[in-house]
Length: 272
Image (cartoon, rainbow, N blue to C red; front, side, top):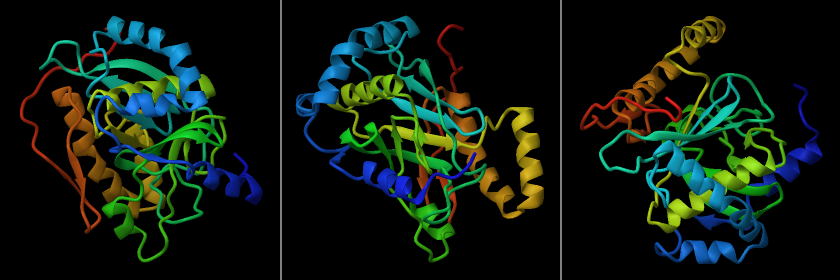
């Protein structure tokens, strides 16, 4: 796709910065009340909270939400919303799948400011932006320690968001309805006490043969990507093997460290 204008680039940077509420801000039970003061959040709650509850319950997910987990796939252009099951010690369930409505850059990680790339790796929701220039925004905790290592001393960039308005130069854009649903789910999970909402971003589904062939072709042209993508595999497979989001730590040497899973459980998706 053609790159957006420099003016739009500046506006997109602004969307990802004001006003922001840290994901860890406020005690459990206070966060919803604070978010509800913002007109867009209040309207989104009124429109989507009941239908979201229906979606969670139909999927067998806990309500109010807990164990929220977001996965996004660049090549497939989708973002998934997972949540802990209604009954504890059961695998996470897929609640909703949202189309990513605009692409930016190409397969491969974000390495520096202005490269138009969507990051790839293991992140978390870092901020809530209830008054975003692009409707509503959830911050992605890019850059992490591994990203800073790979930026090789160059500014790595930042202000990466999942947001609305279907415009991007490195963020993950959804239509306004889907971002309202995702934002509301995240607010409710945070209000219920979940201070860490993981976001895992992959080039494609790493266990899919078509994805593997695509990445092999890309790595033949850019050999440095092979080791990077190999480093995502353990975290990707851990979720499939255990049914729970793995804890993945970004290290200062540019690698990811996966805490060993405590147990293995089959993964269950909504509708299966």
